[in-house]
Length: 267
Image (tube, rainbow, N blue to C red; front, side, top):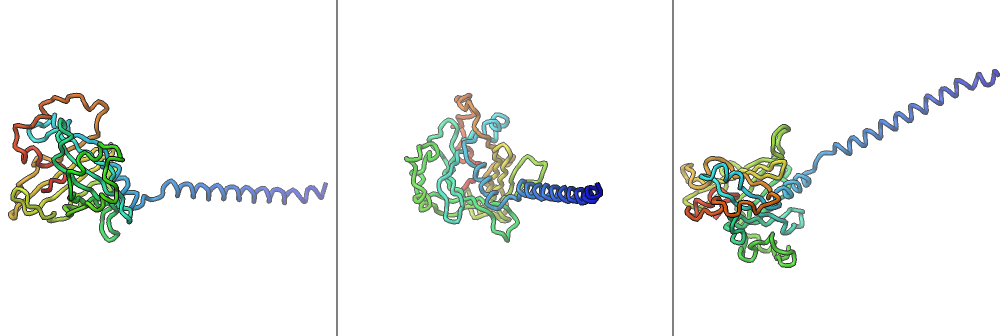
């Protein structure tokens, strides 16, 4: 019995040590899992989120219904077109009046990539002209085998027009990212402008708010909506409802009035 009594403290000590080892392993495993779940979003993750949010078919119909004097029901269509060697996403973008999607009045390439590390932003969205716009008309609506190839897309990227610097929105705001062109904007000569500015907000429901304006040398606004940004929302399930609404027939307005203020207004 004395022998058994001597071994009891050793047994208890080993049990306590084993318990400590198990607890330590649990804590280490929990820390690893927590680190994995709270891993910070990388610069390229931000770029992918922005590119994905820009993609798709979106309309300004609700806004046009609320304020038909200043906004029209415009269809914005965006989709992936190519990817550069450095990972930058090239998106094709076009706008048209809702009733005539086959006749876009604006066609552009977007290039989406992380901001340089020395800049206080997360994502750059740059806009470029297209060398042969007719070749890309309704690009996103075509079957993939009827679109220009990615290498052709890269070759057709023309003049740089604008760059918007986006930052993540603070917690509690409706947006995911928001930003604008740098101070002073970019050169623009349409309708007597000397330069233009652009603002972009990406909301959590893939809604996009854009506000583009042109100014002359004296700082007077010469094009673009004055009342606020255009609000583009993803296409509803039944996008054919209201097809013949007067909001879709702005023929009584001059063209410059009909298209002013739409996303990335550059001529």
